[in-house]
Image (cartoon, rainbow, N blue to C red; front, top):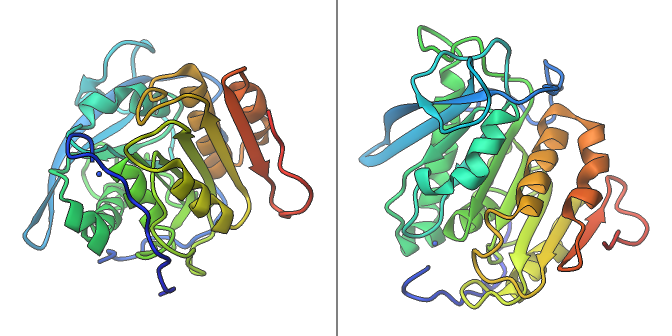
Length: 299
């Protein structure tokens, strides 16, 4: 494991944030094209554990029915196979309070496990939460076998996506650095701080999102994390944005979904939409492509 850099953290009390069995290898090709139309969204609850640690997880997924509206509990799964993209909420939040990101992601054709953590600062910093997410990814992939309604609908060849906000963003960055999960091929840490040096065992497309007036998790620390991250990578800055003010912004949602479509479906049209999806007078979009050469793209 790489030596961790010093982690910079400025968390207020009010808003502060063991890898399982590998079922797929990183970098494998996806088995399905990116969906052309949105889906309705279903959700199922799973009460998993890792040792004595509860891992209550709400798995959101493309469902049959009319697109739009709230997720429907235990709705029938739509035809097709879909990549897995996990989302970890921030301190004091929940998957249900993170629907601004989770629902559009599931509607776009992803299976989205959303754990409901009772966040503990120590667990984020000692790697327990990152290991919990790795276990949740393993359990989600295992649903593809046996009698679960999601069996046969999970694309186990596409790599895995991880994402999260605040403590969830820190957990996400930890899965690329101090507690690496080599199955991860796409990641979006939102409002995170630097959790350490990149691990050579992870090869992921990584998008950072942050407000440059965040007084909870330091923007400068996320910039440090970005500078050390290998390409392909991007950074979406919200000028004047606070810790969570951009969370439900259309630029956040559009960029989030298109990054994962590129990362897990290899959808190059989604990659090409990224600058326009992020563009506004209040944002800066930076991107370094696969070859890591040339200047970053600024919008």
